Image (cartoon, rainbow, N blue to C red; front, side, top):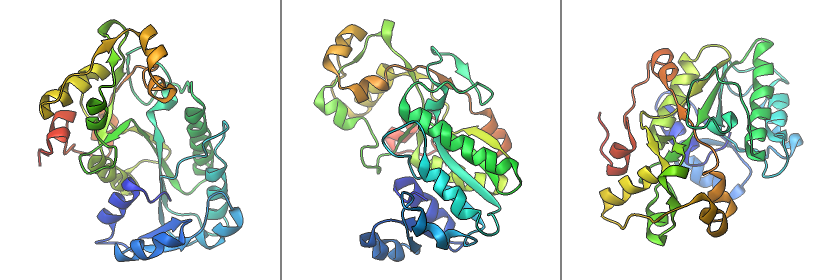
Length: 286
């Protein structure tokens, strides 16, 4: 569910050993998905009647479909749960949530025991989806795993690097106002998702992030140095509120540092891109 960039990376990893099906609402994607070795199922998470064929069709489910753009709930996940429960439930389900559910942690190191405190409507929609799926998992099958995902990046991902932002000269916050940011390479996220399908414990939540420990402006400076581009100007938060669009500001309003020990220990996961330096240089460690 949700066969965008990450969904396609996951499907590519699974296709060698499994039959992979993907829900799509676009008839124009059918041929493209088939060419990638994926069996497409035409349906729309906004239209419950179109999801009847999902019942009993899969033993393992990856749910990467985003919530709607409005409201505080995620009816798409509700529709999916109801469709999948019409017959035997899948063995496991992995949901791609967001680390935004933690809200602003004022730069503190946090793990999965931290209570959720969503500030933005999009984070509240993700909490609603998590609650629906975990409630379903508590009743028996499936074995639900929630992945809390920070900023996804990759050189081969559309909009997946700060290069365009650096080229535009978009300013960043000065050190006194700056926030900590967290990242995961798209390939590492796909690999972690596949492992969670098989190794994830029942009702487990996992932070899926790399080992970087950077404030946002330092991340931008690192990228600028690697690519020999001008470093962005640093401005105060008051200036940023006047000059930057609301979406950019929203990512500057929360600060946290995610611990990933559970990812490494429970899933026995090894990061191919341990920090953003390896990822931005395109140099995996294995």
